[in-house]
Length: 399
Ligand code: HEM
Image (cartoon, rainbow, N blue to C red; front, side, top):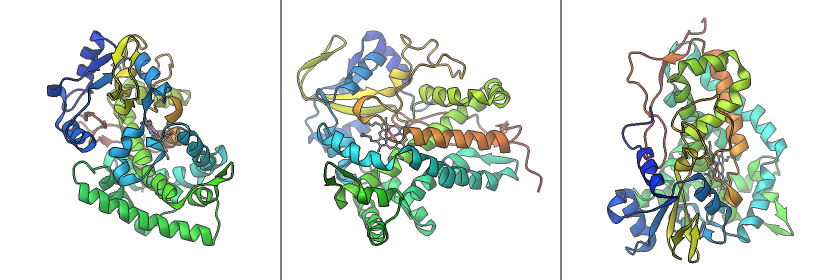
């Protein structure tokens, strides 16, 4: 299943057999890594290590003193501004304390009922009468971005350009000029929204960010824009891929899909297994701040550490038959949402979105199965992974 074009797992497996960290030889760098390396380090690429065991990944992510996130400033920071992703302690803790005020249990409940479920319903309604669909193009791709846009308060008429700018933003290493232009367009959109919330205080995300306060400190406008810019790629690109991967796992294992239909008590296990099996983001990055060692492997100061969440999730020392998709496997925490201080701030929302989508698919699309006329789906990608399409058939709703 998860084989074919752009599959990093066989490499991870080979490296893991050598030890917890693999030092990347120049010829092992992908063209994209070389481009990013030149952008970030001006040609002088430092030693690069890839962490591939569960223990090594957890040790690195737990320790922001030895393993800094500041390197993101030289890549994503160029278009997003100074975001929480690139902050280290103590700045990170203070900022996260402020941002977290917008992600309360009450806010999550409101988003679930006012945004997530109606948006999922709208998308499923659009296909339910047809009996066939591409679940990626028509469902998993558009719905999470509509949720983020709704949270931010982007008007329906601006939704398409919001989505386009969000995609262009993260293509900075492919087309820098377009990335910078998208960043500026998003700033203008957010500035309008912030001015409106200042004039008329509200309880939505922008309203809460405008008022958030911790020890007498408030977020300045640029910090709010940076956070909002991060949300679309952080919250939509990831969720669309993880939901697609889960549906792909279920559709290619019809016995497990049938088990889930028969026992909805398995939904949470299925969600976690989908995330473990195919992490939508396979790697994140840290820079090493001092000469140190991880699980016995030496890492010199200044090294770039590629932290492979995907490899950690398939470490045979932690998971039996790690490459198999199995919603009944004993639950053990995975690392797809990372770990430590930067653990994903939106993970509860991502789970709510996935549950809402699964409920709708199970309730509204009876007989759901892969279209036998279509090419079997394939999960592809080295850094971001998901199936480009999921062509399915189901029993159409009566007109
Ligand atoms: C399945 C879906 C998702 C996955 C797999 C995911 C994964 C991650 C990962 C791996 C990180 C850590 C990045 C790093 O430290 O380098 C992260 C951070 C973050 N995520 Fe998510 N994410 C998901 C959904 C969301 C959603 C829905 C939101 C918001 C609406 C969100 C907002 C954030 C934010 C703000 C951070 C930065 C936290 C910090 O630096 O302290 N994510 N996410």
